[in-house]
Image (cartoon, rainbow, N blue to C red; front, side, top):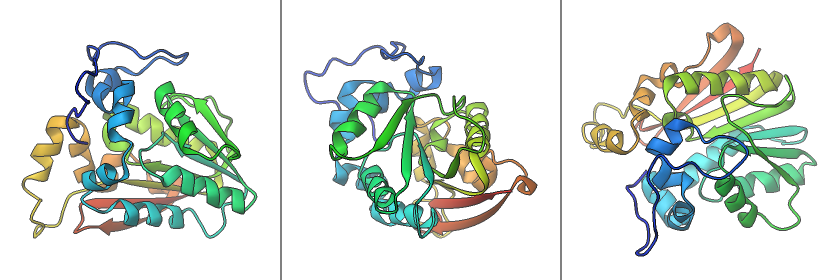
Amino acid sequence: MLANLAQPGDAMPHPGVAAVGETPVPEYLRLNYWWAYVHPAAVRVFERGWLVDLILWGNYRQLSAAALAALGPRLDGDSLQVACVYGDLTPRLAARVAADGGALDVIDVLPVQLDNLRHKLPGDTAVRMLEQDSSCLALADATYDRAILFFLLHEQPADIRARTVAETLRVVKPGGTIVLVDFARPRWWHPLRYTWLPFISRLEPFAADMWRGPNGMCLPPEPAHQRTIRRFFGGMFQMVTLTRA
């Protein structure tokens, strides 16, 4: 993400200040991402299509389209999005789910992000929004046919990341699909290979783990699932598609 771009006059709280809500804001979010997600000013800054695309080096449309396609040709049944995202991915996902007669749940630990999503969706969109921590989902086992995590894992420390992945696998049905999109190690010839990691690590302290590929995502051993991997933009981005065993 980019550094704090709050508008003049926006009062930003100390990083340790918790957001108001029934679910406690995780410490890693309060300390490291208060400027990007927790404070309401963050929504006003980052909820801009051009800025989201800039952060992803012009690849937002391609990555979001690939992720939605990887969920399957039809999105009937029950779908889960783990964490809100800036941009129009969720409205597009919700439209596909509705067209196929399915249902969509979106979870996020931050009320401000859920409220932002509510304003992005058409008034007649039937999306259930749940204030929950991705590492401890209050959802039943084998509930969903598919799930998507779009640029979430690089924002979490390894222990939280491992629990988030395990929880997502738990709530997806056997044979269901899980799509994870995130950063990755650029190819040796990529012009940003030696500058991107130092830059992003100053803003996102856990992002370097993604350079280890699927291992950095804290995925369980493959007997628990089958996986396919796609790389984008000279390897800088990865999409891992899991089929739960």
